[in-house]
Image (cartoon, helix red, strand yellow):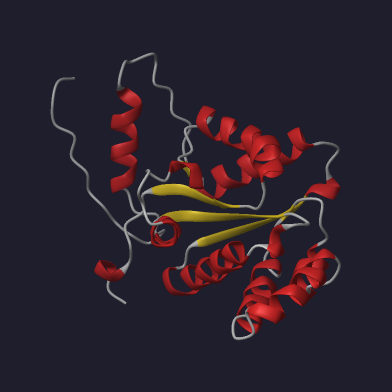
Length: 212
């Protein structure tokens, strides 16, 4: 595959999640730390009014270096979330994107084998989405087989958030940026970083011309 066929990276992390409780609680703390660490994360609230939701989500997944899937007990009840997982796995295989599963208050085996609350969700899906069920199950198994983070192994959400951020920074190989209080520098740094390929074997030359 030629480099021209690979979507350009725009976001550091695409976050796939389910439910208002996750959005207002755990995810709000996570995105706050992302902002502090200068990690450009995509959450669906970044969609502009009038945008078509699914095509915009597909584009965001394709243009994210990492997809972070927050598997919660209610995650599989959403066909949108399951479609996101299918696309995320596709981008991993097609573009070698990074996938990090987070098992938040759910066991990896429940996700991998669709047991517990996931079994109940799929019982309902079989009634309405027969042709998609196996595709969803395969994508869940593939993503749950990856090395991830289990919230049950930490004392509280703060520790889980720290573990996620540390892993994201490590996988991005992102240096810590000290803007030194320069007004407007954050946007320029983000632009520069967007030009830099995440391909480990890529060689690039970037010239910076201007005042010292």
